[in-house]
Length: 82
Image (tube, rainbow, N blue to C red; front, side, top):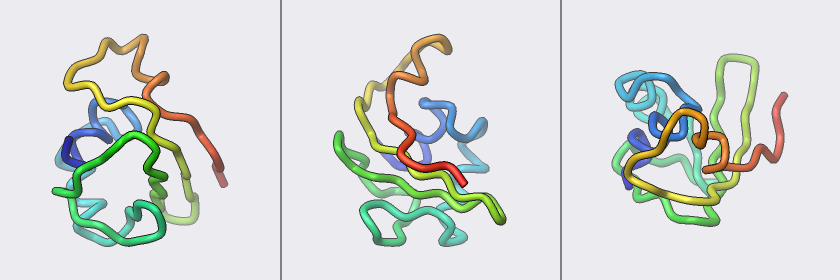
């Protein structure tokens, strides 16, 4: 699944266009590398997102195409939140 779609499906970022802009603006890195919105997310990847001064680091646990709002938090594990 594309990175921008995963961020939307997991509800880490509310809109896909915002997720796309964040990745295009080099504010998202996966496994220590800055990636583009089309990056193929896999289970076990560590995604780091910079929201201004705040940094969120999550580990991907699942990559389903569709998920209900109540189950979205189970797709990732928060490793670090500053």
